[in-house]
Image (cartoon, rainbow, N blue to C red; front, side, top):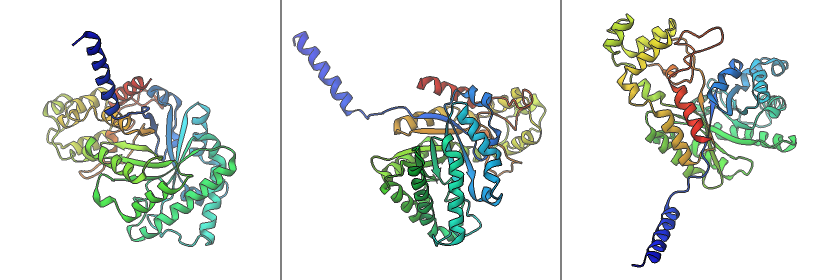
Length: 376
C-alpha cells in the first residue's frame, strides 16, 4: 500500500476512535465542605487545600427558633459572607429538619407561611454571598419515615419559593434540590425519591440535584451517579456536596490494630480499630503516631487512593463540583459508630494541633492538592 494512502487510513481510524470514545467534557471542580459548622471557617485552612469552592449548610428551622434577630447575628452566616469576601465560590444548603415532626401539608397554614417568610429573610442575607443554593440537606434522613408522603410536596413548595425569590432578586444563582443519600441501594430508590427527581427534571428553575455519596466502594459511587443521571435526563446537572468511604471504614472498626504499631506507641495490643480511634479522639496523638496508625493498617492502605479515584469518577461522569470534608468532629466512637474522623482533610480532633487554631493536615491533604494541580 502506498505510504500516502496508509497515512490517510491511519488518520481515518484515529478519527473514528475519537468519535466512538465517550466525551468527558470539562473536569468537575473540587471544593471543601464545612457541613453545619461554617463558623469554623479559616482562610489559611482553605488556602492550603487550593480549593476554589466552599460548602456549608444552615439549619433553617433551628435558626428560625432563635427569633427575628437570629439572621443578623448568626456566626455561620457571618462566616459565609467572609468566604465570599475572601474570593471563594460558596455553596449553601438549606436544611429543613423534620425528623421529629410531620411536614406541613397546608401551604396556607400560618406556620408554613412563617417558615417561607423566614426563608425569604435568610435569602436576603445570603444571596449576595453564594453561587449555589441547595434546597435541602439530607431530606430522606432528616425526616420521619412515617411522614414521607409529605416530603416531596414540602420541598417543591420551598424550592418554588426560592425560585421566585431568585427571579425577583436581580442576581441569578444556580439552584439544586437534594441531597439524595444511598442511591447505590435499591431500597433507597423510593416513590418519594422518584417524586423529587421528577420535580427536578421537569422544573425549569432547577439546575439539577445534589448527591451525598458515603459509600463502601467506587463501584457504589458509580452506581448512584448513573442512577441519578438516568432519572434526571439531559439538560440537568449533578453536584456532590458530600462524599467519602465512610461505610467502608465503618466495616473495619472491629479489626485488630497492628501489633508493631501498638508496641512502638505503647498502646494496648488487644485493641480493635474503634478503640484506638476513640482513644485518639479523647487524647489527641502526634501527627507521626496518627499517620503510623494509618500506614500500618492494611485496610486503610487498600483505599488510600479513594479520594483521587472518586474525583476521577466525577470527571468522567460530568459532575459540576464535589466538596470534601475539611474537618470532622464527633464526641466519641464505638464499635458501630460512623467513623467520620477518618475522612477529613485535617485531623483536627485526633492530632495534636500545630498551635492555637492550626490543625494538622490529615492523610488526604496531599491527594486533594494533587487533584487540584491535575485540574489546572
